[in-house]
Image 1 (tube, rainbow, N blue to C red):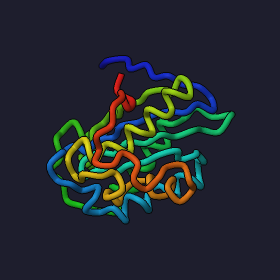
Image 2 (image 1 turned 90 degrees about the vertical axis):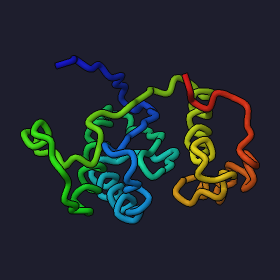
Image 3 (image 1 turned 90 degrees about the horizontal axis):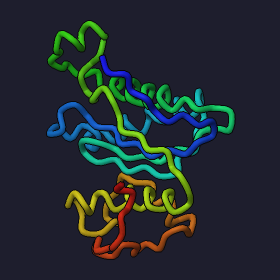
Image 4 (image 1 turned 45 degrees about the vertical axis):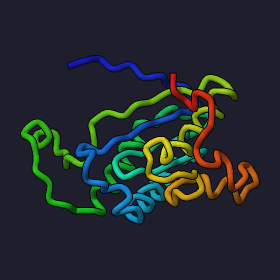
Length: 176
């Protein structure tokens, strides 16, 4: 079994990509309320700052900042995934390796994580979250995607409602 090494910094800020196992089902937006409800108990039990979140049909991107004395983002993501899976209570076809680990088969086992290095990196990853529905051609304008903290940040005055216009922005947007 591979030995995965992840960056762990107490109080760190991280960008995550979390994918469903079957990328064609669209479960995350189909059951958006259940996914949203999965975040709150985790934030109560293991607090974190949700800097940015975008939920697409088959994956989500998130920028999360941990408390100063904490580096355990893996437990938070695991609990979010478990909470969503339990809320759905769907019958899924199980592969033997998933059955032996008591996994439901809704999520890919791993997630992609990137430790934010500096302010520019932070901004690029926030932008990447918000432009992602445009990149995947779900909408033409960022403001038209309802499953994003972009709207929260517009209300806070951090972004204008017409940010990214028709999605034609230049830049790297978190891609390394």
